Image (cartoon, rainbow, N blue to C red):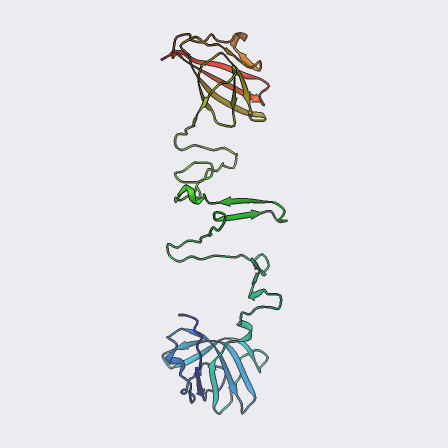
Length: 316
């Protein structure tokens, strides 16, 4: 079943009443409905009865059995929009393209389709609370092409004054992969976006990993920037004074691990004054060459106080 619109389709009919139209053969220089329609196809039709000044335009359904057109939906008629009660005599019925179904460009350049407006670069639903739906077929997908930027979609607020943009990776990344929406809130899943549950909790279904950030010192100073990650490693080359920067805001927890590798000449560390060690006593570093000490730091007040813990010493 399909909607079919064809040129030069016109037949005569002697049907009376308001029922299905029995087709009586092609008019001169025209073709029959049966030559262009299959059973259950629909088409727009027009009936003209010049003897009785009657007309009707509508959507009809073709039936190969009986060679008829059922008047499925009447769009306009000389009977106030209802099916015309056809009188005796010969009438013409032909494929039509109703004005109400025509798509055309308005004077302002917009194109109006029922409940949909195409205007410049915008597609708008004109129906109250109307949806706009895209239907790929089979395994096809809806694709957003890139141009000078990668494929991009933006989600605006209800006032269109703010928006969040989602963008594909750059061409240089040579990245082709699938990211799936999760089927359970708050539980991480392979190739899926990470979401929290109704309580704001995220449950990691598999392990997590962190990049190890290598710290270097210059002029006896080094900064550990917590925006870079949660694991840091410093192979000492001189005595060093540390600065801890960019922890989370007050009432959020920031935790990081610091691995220290001792130099061939024993180096010392001056910790930030904000670090609170157990018994107010900083640990003594392992002094042997390549000796490894591991420390953990925690703050929950934006870095005003870091609690320092010795996870282990004299490794290696």
